Image (cartoon, rainbow, N blue to C red; front, side):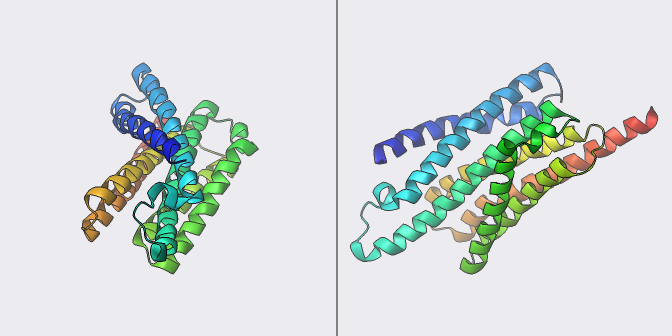
Length: 246
């Protein structure tokens, strides 16, 4: 199990680094251009690998935390350390699911455009509902444990999942609203990716710097949410003006 986890970790780091770089290619390119579409597909495919490997690694750690991260742990500390490892791995599992759901939603919205029937299939709705439920669980764990990180990302997961579900089930959508939804979902996937990267990296590098470490974890979520709100407002107004001018 440890060998499998280490192999997956090396793979995860490699594809994760590629994803963090690829995120900016479609983000900075002209929207709708051939290069934007091409690099957007590259980013989505790599992110599926990132999310998949992250899910498997998190499940392995949750199954047997001390086998993977328990080197040097004494018998009297085993239970406490095991619980701490499981809690953090549960958070990384949540982030991996957030990334997977956001990428799939963003790509599927783009393919469906005005026809949202494929979004209402079980294969997609199951992702959204699991994200919604896990966000509630994360929030409750954050309340009971007082962990600020969980109190930020639990509500953020609720915000993202309820927004996706609202888009899927609302009676009607405005023309080009699928583009705004696509944009928000892909930025949301970037939030998850950068948070996971900083959560793991900052945990190692900034282990003794409490507030700085916490800031590194929370910054992607806060910044990403602001960007989603501003970009969504920008393109919603832009498309509304185009419609009025016709």
